Length: 118
Image (cartoon, rainbow, N blue to C red):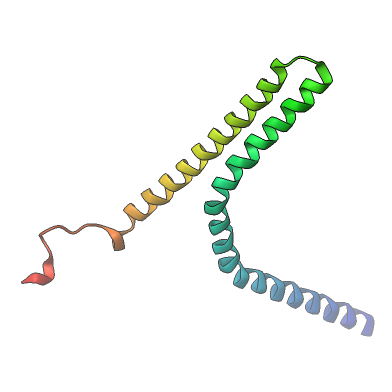
C-alpha cells in the first residue's frame, strides 16, 4: 500500500515538474521570438555575404579537384543564386508581415468618416 502511495506521489511530482517547465518555456517564448525576429532582419545582409563566400569556396574546391576553371564560376553562380534566394525569402517574409499589419484593425485607415468627429 505504501509503495502504491509512493508511486502516485512520484507521478504527481513528475507531472508538476513537467507543468512547471512548460510554463517556464511559455514565459520565455515571447522574448526569444523577438530575438529571432531581430536576428532574421539583421541576418539578411550577412547571409548574402556568407552565401557568396561559400559559393566562391565551393568553386575554388571544385577547380582544384577537377582542374577546370569553369567550375570556379559554377560555384560563384551557386553562391549568387543562394544570395538572391535569401533576399527573396526575406522579401516574402516582410510582405507577409505587412499584410498581417494591414489586416489588423488597429492600423487600418479610417479616412474622413470618423464617427467621433460629430
